[in-house]
Structures are given as structure tokens and as C-alpha cells.
Length: 145
Image (cartoon, helix red, strand yellow):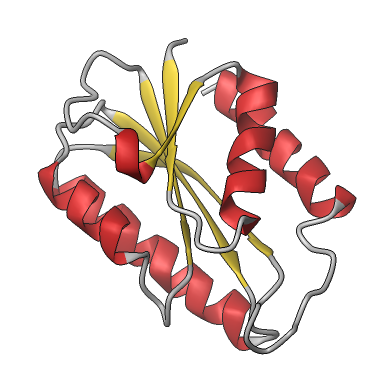
């Protein structure tokens, strides 16, 4: 399967998860600043963002609006707020899935994990080994979709 991972990372958390997924899947990987908007030649897009108050980053939103997508997508997100981060990330991933489905892409899988929050100093040392291993498990599932 030919896939691409597109991510936005403000503090490095989302990038770490993107790299773990790429290492497991061997998909192409590109930060949001260098990605083409025509991805129809891929079998799957794996799209990652930090959670910004129940929304993906502005750059990811712009990309989702303009991009020509493959039929299948998978989503991942990092967050830094305890408790609310889990809830708001789930809400955000669902929003992203709905936006992408309106463009004809079917969301195949979702993943989220905590990452260090620079301002509030929560989740120090994360994403760590536990989160990286979970991201790799998520990636193995992508290879079988």
C-alpha cells in the first residue's frame, strides 16, 4: 500500500508520533509546510495535528479544505491537557473525520495520545516509549486496512 503521513507539530509531540508511524509503515512523511494538495495517487492519507481547543491546527484545517484526497484516511492527534485533552481530542478527531467524509474520504482509524504541554508543563517526557509503542501498534493496523 502506498501511503503518506502529513502532520503539523508545534512543539515536536505530533512529529514524534508521525515518525513512529512512518517507521512502522514505510509511508512517505511530510510536514504540513511542504505537502502537495493533490494526494489522490496515494492509497491512504494519515493526517496528524496537535489538539487546539477541540480543533486541529489552522494549517491542517486549510489543508483539509484544499486537498484532493485518497479514498481512505486515518487521523492522529496529540494533546497536553489532562482529562479535557482526551475528551476534546476525541471531539476534534470526530470533527476532522466528518469534514474529510464530506470530501469523499473514509476515515479508517483514529489515534490520540498525550504530549508535553509547554505552557502548563503537563505530561512531561511524553510522548514517551509507551505512546510511541501505541503509535506503532496503530501503524501496524494501517498496513492491514
